[in-house]
Length: 285
Ligand code: ZN
Image (cartoon, rainbow, N blue to C red; front, side, top):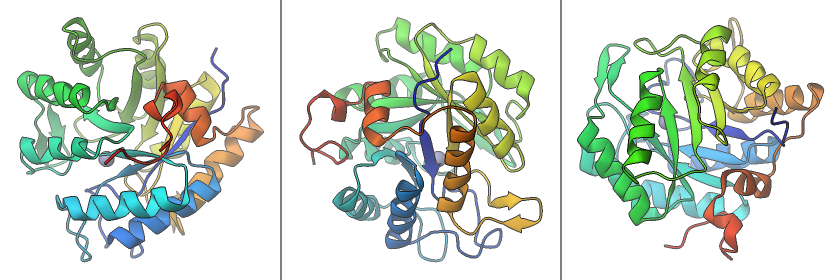
């Protein structure tokens, strides 16, 4: 079993969580960057980034991404993972555009599904186009898996030479329309992965703590943050993304593993920052 240092990803704000759900949800580029930096101080090595207007509306604004990249990379060695999932309703062209920042990581949502009350479309042709974008900009995909069929979608992309190992999988469990956040589901999905894979688990809402703990025990990695859950415990809002990260770091240490540094994460995931890039943790453009 892989008991290497455990990578904590923090998903700062996402596109689905609302200010009504959490009054301090980070929304402006400055708030998002500040929250990422606090989370890094608490033990997160990867920040997953979406952008919003100050009023909380999810948007596609390259200037906002640019500002966040600059702010976070200016004071931390954090790995940045920009979304290509965007928000429901964004065009495919917009979603691919974030790869132009040449981040070390970006999300690749590996199939279509009902997503709450919406429909999240990732057609086979779009997945190929997206994967070509990752190759073009030398970005490692984080393969977002919402149900078992999406693993097969990724393995087909691999057969076609459009994604390359080492594979980094993120199980996103508990979305209404996707696989549930249960221990059995997670165990089964992990068993479906090809040898040599690295993986992480997310549980939405109340599933967050349970899936994070399971992942630590099983030798995987964890993602926490307000994109996925705003509560610290039932009925009690988390005070910040950093508080959620701190709990993961505590659990990781209590369960006998170490918390991965950004350098550990780069090594484990084969990111370009680990390959002698002097700008490790930042971007080449
Ligand atoms: Zn996201």
